[in-house]
Length: 240
Image (cartoon, rainbow, N blue to C red):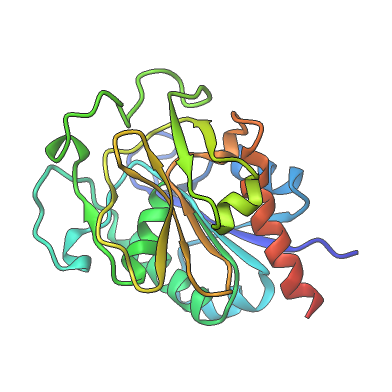
C-alpha cells in the first residue's frame, strides 16, 4: 500500500547563524512524527511559482510553527505589539494553504500554522495574549518545549475529539499570539483553562485542523493521534 506524501512547510531565515547565506530550517520531529504515523514526509521550499506542482504530488499539507508573526495588515489590523514578521514565508504559506483547502487537500496547522489557517479563512488573531488576559498560564512556557505545561479541553462531537478519543490533553505551549475571531466555516474544538483557543477545525467534511500546541513532540500519548488524523485523511485522498 502506498503511503501518503505529506508536504511540510519550512522556516526561512537570513540571520547568519547556520550559514552566512539565507537558509531553510525545520525540526526533525515534524518529519519523524509523520513517518511514525504512517506517512512519507517531504519539505517544501517557499517557492510560490511551484505551488501548483507541489499540490499535484502531495496528499496532505502540514503548516509548521516558527518564531515569527503574521503581519496584522493581512487580517485588517494595525500592529499593536512588537512583532517579528516574515513576509516571504507568510506569503508562500498563505497561498499554498488557501489553494490546498480549495483543492480539498487535507491540511494540519501546528502553532503558527493554526493561526495561518484562521487568517486564510478570514479570521483574526490576538496579537499578544498578555495584552488581553492576566492568565496564570504562560503560553510561552519557560520549561523545555519537549515537556508539557498546561491542559487543553477538547470539545465533544468534533473531528479532534473523534481522533484522540479524549476531552483532555496535557500539552506544551510556545506562542504569544492566538486565534481571535474565527474564519469562515471554522469551529473551536479545544480551549485552555484561561479560554485561549487551542484548536480549530472546519465545519465542512474536508479535513482542515489547527492545533496551537506542538503534537510532533509526542508528549501526550494522544499527540500521535493528532498527526495520524492527517495521515488517515490523506489516505482517503489516495484511495479515491
